[in-house]
Length: 152
Image 1 (cartoon, helix red, strand yellow):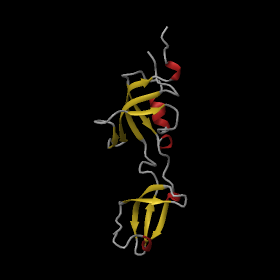
Image 2: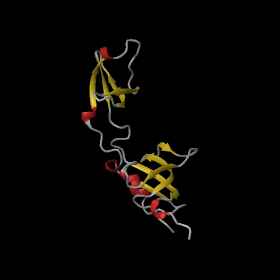
Image 3: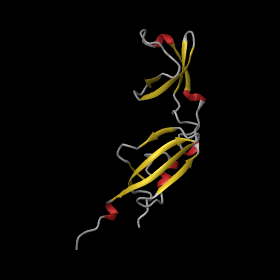
Image 4: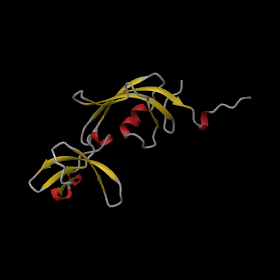
């Protein structure tokens, strides 16, 4: 039976948890996640966890932060003047915001601290610095160009 390998398009169901058991994401009740193994579409540890699975096979993988979203970086924490916020907005700790950089790219930040004249924003990925646990089930390996069988 075929196993998932680099370059294969696959469909998987997954349940992502923190090491304390808290769920942060799951495909339950949704379509399976579809991606190409080894293409960088998912975190490296997830790619590794799918590699070698057969259709219908399940696996639990423990992914250290370095193979997931990396370590949290102090460089991603910035102080922003309150005067730059819309006047009708009241910044609160934990509030998610969309920001854009000089190139027009948008990214999410979370308010980490509210000071008298400024707000401390954290642009790290919410799962940065965290070890993750995924329960993965390989649902399907999609036919690729190399596996098309031509009629005789």
